[in-house]
Image 1 (cartoon, rainbow, N blue to C red):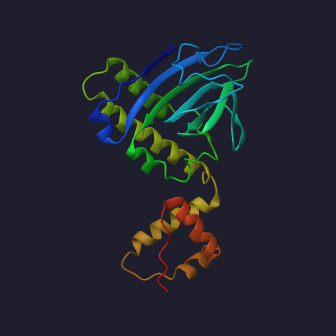
Image 2: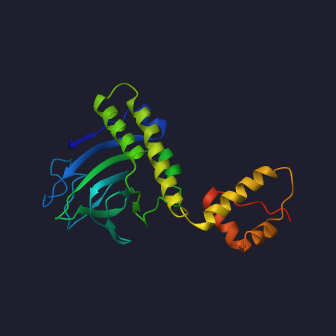
Length: 236
């Protein structure tokens, strides 16, 4: 893994697009190394005792090693496969454990459209470390962005923004599915979705349907909305 980072100059076209990258990079931090590297610009570099506040969003995908993160909301363990979320104006500090080091892949970004994306309930300062696991599809998009950033061809910011949206969407999807994977409620919700499609032209008593699934209607409604993004329609 090659250490690399690049800070971007932002054109008006990129700002008007609504989502643009400010920095992208990756680094392998060996055990017992100083962190962060000292060759970053002053506004990005930080000392552990002081922490840091950025004016942008960042995601940092840790693919090897482990460490810790601290914010005003508490202390968080950063394990292999974690994604660190940073927000504008958010005080934070993080570092790898001395005995493990870590491998990181990070992207900084901003723009009006970013604020729309970050309305998702899973992207919050209160849970700045998400357990993603090793996801080859996500890592590939990081690598594609790094290649585009290094080549810096015309319109590269626009292409990078599309890949970044995919990464954020994939992170949210993986986290949401991890809450249901292998659980009985997932099977029942999927069963309900098929039932609703097969009976799309019929009125369905949702409370009766939940009872047939051996679930209370309030629980079924809450979990159905959490899984699909919308509540079942009660036609009684």
